[in-house]
Length: 206
Image 1 (cartoon, rainbow, N blue to C red):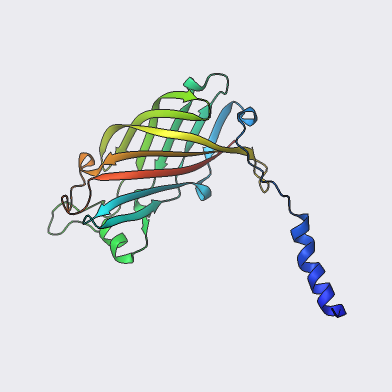
Image 2: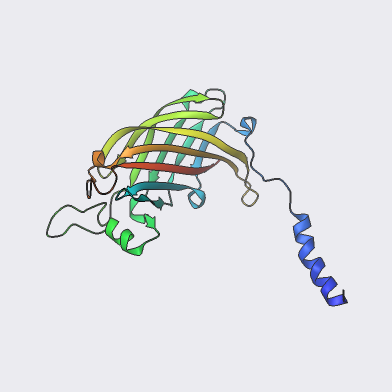
């Protein structure tokens, strides 16, 4: 290997070798500190999926959520979650579908889905039942002007200090399902599924 190639190889290998083999976060409940945490909006996603014509499921996501988690590791039943989801920022793989989701109703009629400038959705917990690394988080979900009780099946996925901003971060994943017709979104029922599965990945920073 000539001198130039040797220098290039060392330049590439050195930063790789310097990287830690372990990630900052770990599934370790002893790292959780009591207090109030804020949603890391850049790394929190609410995914949804719904069946299309009985053929397959279609996916979309909501991002830029905000909110808080208040938690005391010594008394998890007192934990509180309050998250706001900007429905108007819904994203799908199809620009046409995204536009349809946010399209206003025609001729004074109600919109097919969310409509133009929809109100944010919001989940506010009412109780938490924890069991080890998992918890059932019950609360009220407000969507499209309708509020219904919902229970999230949540699991702790990591705790540690963010290596960039140094903030203590707690990560969770949660799942639930809702019927969109119960929230006043009835377009295409019978062709498009009523049940919507929600898959939530959220990071909270202290």
